[in-house]
Length: 231
Image 1 (tube, helix red, strand yellow):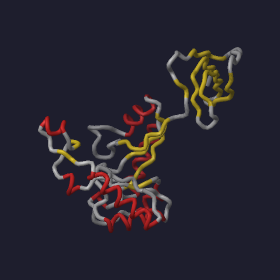
Image 2: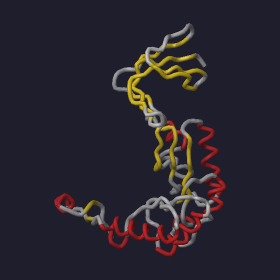
Image 3: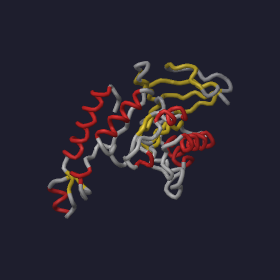
Image 4: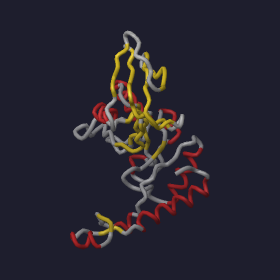
């Protein structure tokens, strides 16, 4: 890979505290030097970075839907990770509401294999809290962790009951895994489709009060304190 010298880039690097205009020398796909007015040696391709562009560490999206397996008409792991890197995201965490649901090692391993084949953004699978995301029986969280999941979630709906959430927090804590919760009290949400208020009423839409979120959040915060789990 030829050496590249990025000239006049705005570099934002929280780890080093840099936020300013710098040159970056790239050798063998890695940043070799950072400085100002770096010389362009023979055989180095110079790339002038336009004003307004930023060079920074790869971004991470903690909530994406790659839809594979089972919903490839919406998205695939290859197309989703291609879109991610095009937007500067080098790692994504994908939700488990696929078909079948990512509630076992087989699905997790499939996702990771497809991500490796695409060889674009890094993919961190999030497994389901409950089998089939049905809210009745815990998935095997230990198996999911061993297969490569970084967290668990019943994404798209909350963990169904306080007891199930308690057991999930206790189980996940054994593997230092957080639960990524969808905070929405379903009976209070009802058939609502928009935030409750003037605009929903004007448009004739059924409203959802903000308390539908806060009530579920309070439940889960309380249970996290009880179990020492992470949510």
